[in-house]
Each structure stands twice: as structure tokens, then as C-alpha cells.
Image 1 (cartoon, rainbow, N blue to C red):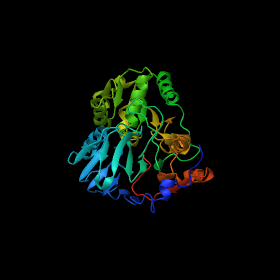
Image 2 (tube, rainbow, N blue to C red):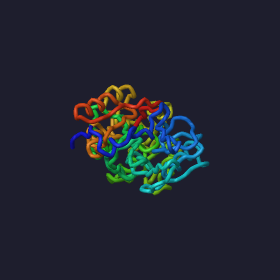
Image 3 (cartoon, rainbow, N blue to C red):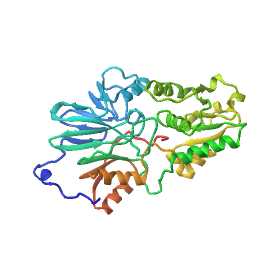
Length: 347
């Protein structure tokens, strides 16, 4: 699909297209509605794409998000007051003639793209997203728009995520090869841990999976929200012998912590898109790198832009330079946004 550099007649008739939405250092400001998308500081009204800490924060006067994201935020940040749920596909009327619709982003449970419409113009803010199937959340939905605001966490050509079945197969093979040990998987506490567990179940692994205590509440919340995870047990309640031949899931920070000494000869693994970079695996002393990402890879980022086919792409965080260059080579309009507070999570 070719680029769309020329303004359509509809845009040429407007002196300042898209002037109603501004990229400020602390978030996307929807001016007529006086609200913000994923602001990095407290505001009167925030529209939140998902529950990760670099997008969702407490302290807002009102938080608008999917019911699942609001539940996650309440668990993590105690944000029950001022919560306004928005179902997928529901259109909310904001102030100033702006409407907002929440559309699945496929990143983690409850994650949403936010479609904003005003004066005949359409802006989609993706937050974070992925294009691969995930048993724990609805899949990403392509939504045509005029301005497409995308992440670029893995916005370099070297990032090509393998099929998750391949990585889960590596994990199960390591388990089979070392029946007297356990495989200790470092996984981000929101989204990645639950996805790894659900993918293990889908692959036919129905044995107990042991959890670091820091993982339990989020896993239980996923189950309360309708995501079955099977037989989960706490490491603190088990003996070394009981954990032999089993998978243990922990936060990445606990992989080489003193806590892991209670485990039976653990084989250290980590589930992350960053495991494509060997140096990152070595830095964490990871024996079994599992390239499992909850973000789009390079090919998926560029394919998504082609499918959405916006007038202009705005790139919020990640490897902006390469994605900007790709737009230039494909005669597409794009610019990078200087937002603060967004980080490379352990993915």
C-alpha cells in the first residue's frame, strides 16, 4: 500500500488540521476535552490504554479505561476513586465535541487503543500493542485513522519474534531433559507471566506451576477476570523436592536473588523480546533465553502502519530513528514525539 503524503480535500479545507490534539512532554493532550492520554503526572481526567506503570498512574481526578485495566490499576495503585469504565467498542462523548472509543490492542489483559474523533478527524493512540495471538487478551484490531500514534519498542529490523510455540517448546524440552531440576522463568508480573502460563497450558502442560509470592495477586486477578491459569502454587508453601521437574515463575529481578536458593537446581530462563540480544541474556546470567514479547516486532510495526494507512504516524517511544527512516523510504509522513516517563520494561 503506498504512502499518503498529500492532504485530502477534507484536510486542505481546514487551516490547522489536528490542532485539537497535542503531544506534550507529559502525555497526549486532547485540548477541547481537556483530558490526557497516558499522562505521566496526575491530571483531572486521564484516558489510560493499559495497566503498565509507564502508562498507568494513580492520582488522577478521573481515570477512563477498560474495566480490566481499572481492576489492574486498583490492585497496583489503589485507584478505585474516580474510575469510569469503557467497554471495548463503546463510544464515549467527551467535552468539546470529542468522542473516544476503546479498541483491543492485544498487549495485555484490558489493553486498548483509543480512537479519538473530532471535527471529522480520527486519531488512534495505540499505547503498547502486539499482533501475535495471546490466550489472555483480545487481539489487536486494525483501525483506519488519520493520525496513528504508535510505540516503537522493538523498532529495529533485527527484532523478529519467533513463534511462541517454538519458545514454549524450548522451555518444556529443558524441563524434560532435567527432571531433577526446575526451570525458573523470569517474566514481567503483569501480562508476560500470565501469558507464559496460559501458553504452557495450551501446549498441554497441566502440572502445577509454582509462583514467586510477588506474582500471586496479579495471577489471581487474571483468573477472577476470566483467564484460566490452571494449578498455581506458591514457592513458599513447597519443598525443594516438590518443585523438581516443575516450572517456577518469578519477577526478572528475582532470577539471581537469594530467594532462588530455595529452588532445586534451577535452570534460569527469561521470557522477553530483549532475549533476542545475546548481551542482555548474558548480563542477567540467563541460561535459557525465551524470545517472548508482548510488543510488535519490526515487521509487525511496519505492516501495521501499512494496514492502518494513516495520513501521518507519530512515534511515542522506543527506536524512533529506524521507524522514521522507514517512513521516509516509503514516502510516508512521520514524526517522533518527545514524551517523558516511558521506559523499556522487561517486556
